Length: 95
Image 1 (cartoon, rainbow, N blue to C red):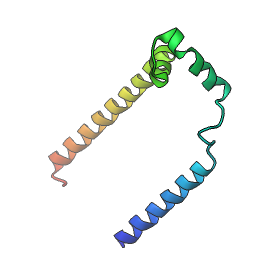
Image 2 (cartoon, one colour):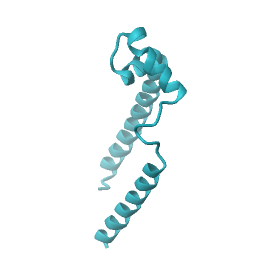
Image 3 (cartoon, helix red, strand yellow):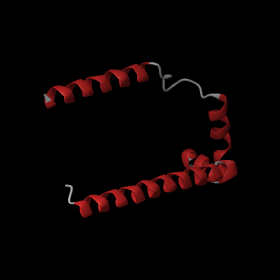
Image 4 (cartoon, rainbow, N blue to C red):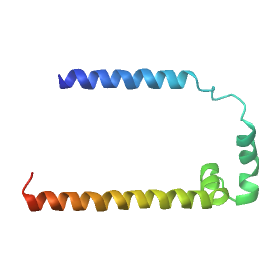
């Protein structure tokens, strides 16, 4: 039964990935307007040759900082909740 479930899940994932990649633009397609903007100005304005790093840490630094703080808050909250839950389970003897 478990093998059948793994096979079914793998096939669903494969079909979903094939459908998603079939709709993607080809790699040699021209860049969009925003991508062209970043591509032209990255080295001149940020002195970074890595476009992704320049976007994340130079142009969108405050946005990235906000997303990081939200992620840290969520991870801390889940850790605190799970700690209390696991401690209560140990105290009551539930395994």
